[in-house]
Image (cartoon, rainbow, N blue to C red; front, side, top):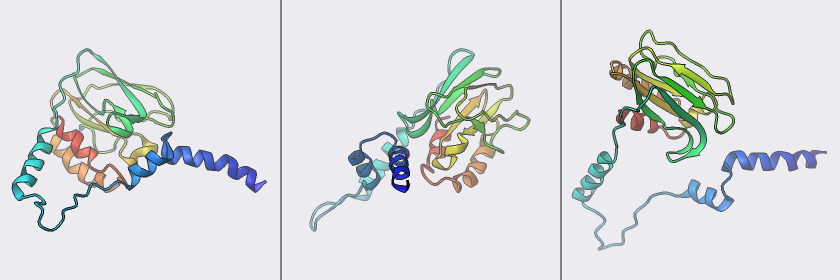
Length: 195
């Protein structure tokens, strides 16, 4: 009986850990370390090269433009352009009174506002697992939301409604929020920098 249970549990664990990727790809991804190896006498980079790399990284951040229309869709995904466990789009700018439709495209996700990371006086929300939820945003400012089951993996998103009146408060709160993230801790800063 125990062996029979193992035959059911092991494939399920494999699916959860590797999210449908081939085993070899998943192992390589988890073990990859971006290291530059320099032999004696070789130019291993100068401070000007490091400076150029830092500058190119900073210029890669594209600012998000105001999304057109009054209805917007955000998908809840296991994998997307921005990585694993992600909302797509993860950052969006909308107008006051617009509606966001969160779509449970992949299973085991929800959308819930993060306590203390919405504009003062704004309504919070918490969608059910595996279900779509629509919210209308009637308070200007920046909203940060998450998928509750995948919050520690930084499955988060950011919405700017009208002007970013509470950006400083959000940035301060994000420092504490980062400490709860086990992986992808830089997502919150990257997303906020796109506004």
